[in-house]
Image 1: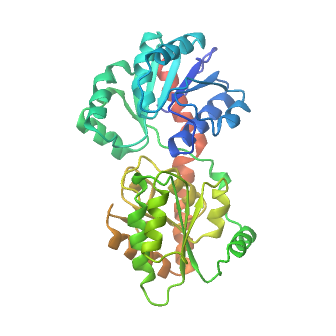
Image 2: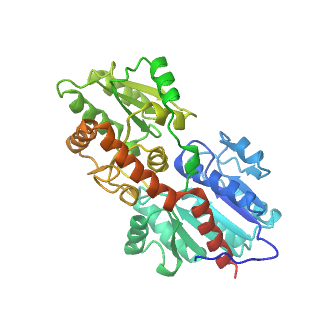
Length: 379
């Protein structure tokens, strides 16, 4: 799929998702919706859950949004039929579904609504219970194509029989690389405001405070880093979630209060990249983590667990460091190694990382791959 078919009339596209709340999948959904709209497609977004954290940014683009007002963890048949009705009213020709529940519901509702093309997007390699994999396997027949954001995940899906080989397409996450530049003035301003000395090595972790991100392992690793003599290191964690109380308890238990700061949700992550010295990701599983791409676009060299598509972004000891998932000692060793590197060495790694992201993951490149797939699927 390297060329876009020119058609006089572009298909009407609806994107179905669980929600628009903060998260990597939702960020990619919003970027895709805006990109398709900008390129002349009629785009609508339907959410299952009544969470409209970022709906305004879509509405400003002229993208129609509607919510089905599902309640979490409760079957609601009447609202399922409302989805069918909405798809028909929108005259949907291509349905793209994001996130597990929306994928299953969208496949069935889309078929019943008579939608010609249904593209499922799997954003993580694993889904929890085995019954979830079974449902994806059973409903695969309803999908025209299934996308995922890393080759590793695609290989795993095929091996597990979740997706038919002829339907599997890899389209990575995308970012607007021009948005991620570092600025020494911003660096000094933020560090001064947060009382961080220029000599302190400052780490940043970004992501929801949920089990997937394995912050307990990160805190254990960071305590090992601080045990090294002479280190002046700080860790910022940006995000919110259900694990906050447990993370706060561990910070106190490990006596890290003076070195760890829970920032909560932030809308200035690109600015924070200027202020910090490196990004660390401790996840137990991922799809294709946006924050790794964003950090690398800002010339940071990340330390990350080798999960999902992370190894497609980071080449170990060339633009960052990869460690085994769940290995606190390994993560600590990698953090110590990176912090011990000279500024010039980290800058060389950062330049290599930015070039890799620009070439393969810029939003314009990724949007074109989506358009190629959409156009191919309707012909």
